[in-house]
Length: 278
Image (cartoon, rainbow, N blue to C red; front, side, top):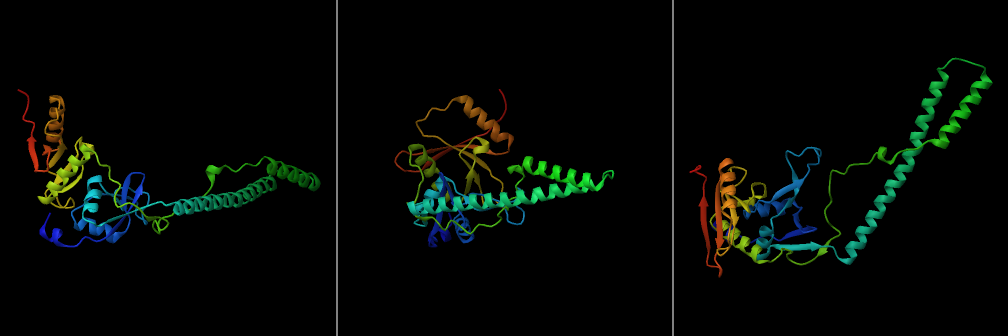
């Protein structure tokens, strides 16, 4: 962490909880988190191109360690659903379902009219007969169509919202919902130590680790290390170490074992690299 980041006052950020996932919605708060060296992961689609997943937008999903870091900096104000918020949310859901039902009824009438028009066009283009017989046949066919017509709900056209006003119905809640366990505390200690050294961190779940460590902004650098947090007294099977080191070698990254000291005295780092079979 640079001295500029450490000295600059942290901007207040409002975080919303989706189950246990901490999310940042506002652009200025996402930018403030990046200024503190917090990367997170963008989850939302872009309004103009909502069906692609190459470039994503808000909200920003934070790591549990990033959420805890913001809470320790005094920059975090969580928002959770109060009783009033829950009732308002239920009212909005009921209103939405009522709107869908009204739209379904309107589209059902329009679909029936279109089907009747198609039947009339087909009958008018068929071979001619007596006028009385034709009119009777049309009336009978239209009555049969109206009795047996069914408009599937899967054919209902709905509007896709491409903009979000924001979680305005949420009220202030606890400052942080990060889970505190010995394993979580160890990971947070490693996170703080690496951030103080100026590294950027993201999740390394797809590489079987805890953190991907970048020497600079991930938009400009590739990750150099895969960090796995283990306690100093923890026994790790040799096969797990070999598998992790081999995976790191295949993706051109170094596996680093991070062992926090018991009384907050720092972190011991041990790097492993695959050098071949003996």
